Image 1 (cartoon, rainbow over the protein chains, first blue to last red):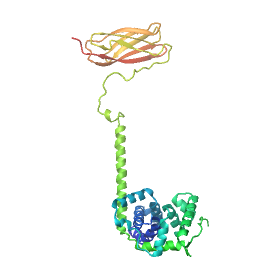
Image 2: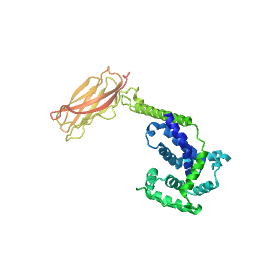
Image 3: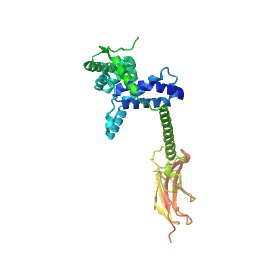
Image 4: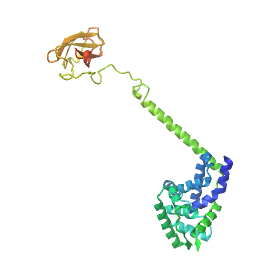
Length: 167
Length: 184
C-alpha cells in the first residue's frame, strides 16, 4: 500500500496544490485541502487503488473541501485569531503574469473559480462539472458565463464557450 | 491573445512547484489516527446506546428505579373489574369504614349484579368469604367481620356475582381495604 500511495502522493501533490490555488487563492489553504484529501484517500486506499485515476478522486475531494463553507469559516476564524503578518503572506512568489491571473481570479466568487478550474483548466465537460458539484447544468453554465465575462474584462485572453460534454 | 486555459495552467504549474508537501508518512499517520478516532467514537456511541437502552428496558421491564424497589401490597391502581355487558350498569363495591381494626365489622354494599342471584364477597388473603343475595335491582349488602388474628395491612376486597349467564367467573370487582393495628 505504502509504495503505490507514496508514488501518487509525491507525483501529484504539487500539481494538485497548484490547481487548488486557483480555487482558493491562498497557497496555505490549497496545501491544507490537498493534504486533507490525501488523508482521506489514505484511509480508503484499498478501494481507491482500483480506480483508473485515483488522482481524480483526490482532486474532486480537495475541490469540494475548498468550497466547504464551514471549513472556510473555521479557517478564517483561525487566521483572525492569529492576526499574524504571515497569515497574509499567502500569495506565493510568482511571475507578474501569474499574479495578474491570480488577481483576476480573486475577484470571482469561489464557486465561479471552482467551475472555471474544472472546465477551463481541467477540461471537465459542463455536465460532469454539474454532476461533480451536485448542481444543475444551468447553474454551471451561468457561473461560467459570469466568470468568463469578468475574466475577459480583466485579462486579455481568449475564452471559449463552454462544452456541454456530449461526444 | 492567449487562451485562458494556458494562462491558468501556467499559474497552476508555477504555484505547484512552490508547494511543500509534508512527508507521506504524516498523511498516512493522520489517516490512521483518524480511523482510530472514528472507531473509538463509534464504539463509544454504541456502548452508550447499549447502556441507555439497557437501563430503560431492563430484563424485568420495570425501568431503572423499579429494579430493587419492592412493590407495596396496597390499593390497586384501578379496580380489577371484569364487568360483562348487562342491563344494570357496571358492578360497584363500596364499604365502610375504609379502615377497620381486627375484630370489627365491615359493611360492604354495591350494585350492578344480575338481579335475584347470588354473589360472594371475600377479603384476600384473610380467608374471609361470605355469600350475599342480590335484590331485584341488582343491589347487594352484607357485613363482614375481620378476624382478630388479622395483621395490619392492605388487603383486596372482592365481589363476585354468580349468574347463569356468566357462569362461575361471573362479574368481578375489587377494591382495597386497610386493616389497622388492633385497638387496645
